[in-house]
Image (cartoon, rainbow, N blue to C red; front, side):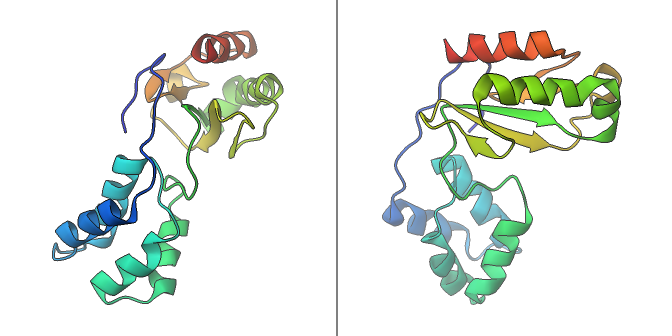
Length: 164
């Protein structure tokens, strides 16, 4: 679900029938698990735990194997994201360029920690590790749009802009 800064995302409600159709359409592909997980997340914005047994059955895998892959990759969501998503780089290069202060200001502004969504569902705040913008760090993605050369003041301003 690609979004651009300022765009608000309305996620479709999880639907087991649609999820099953997606799973079945990709199950015969070589290495089908990751394409299935990506397709489900693209469609719904997250992957409901109800999908695990359906995927396992379609691929003839154990539920534990599917769950292991789903939880290994941090970018797969197991709960719906907020209407806006802020992914703030936590890699060493961004940290060396002031990333900790940017993270702290974002946490203060949002009232949540990394990996959480605001209580009203307006924003999810996730860590990300290296956007390839190391020379321009600290960097982030806001609703899929890269932003760089962040300061504590700039991240607060960008959050405010996204939320208004």
